[in-house]
Length: 98
Image (cartoon, rainbow, N blue to C red):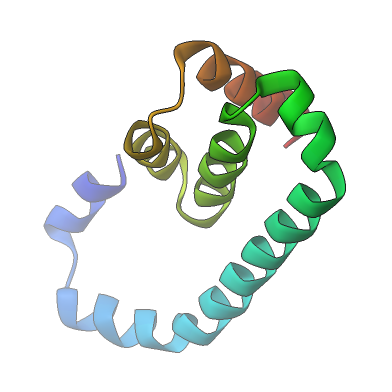
């Protein structure tokens, strides 16, 4: 839906407004990456026990989702080759706890 909103947008205004939001986005991005790293470090054993090798893939996909939304989740999950079962579990966890 978001790309459809841009069809009638003044791209000069979008670019100038976006440049002002870039530092806030960068700070949020660092917080998401840091939080994911701390979470994986603290819960690595649980992730591996629950999902095996897909645990780290699920953590990466969920971090991408927090940064850029659902399309990022799907793209990262596909890029890292997450299994369908792990994908379903990660989406369920995200919907329950996010």
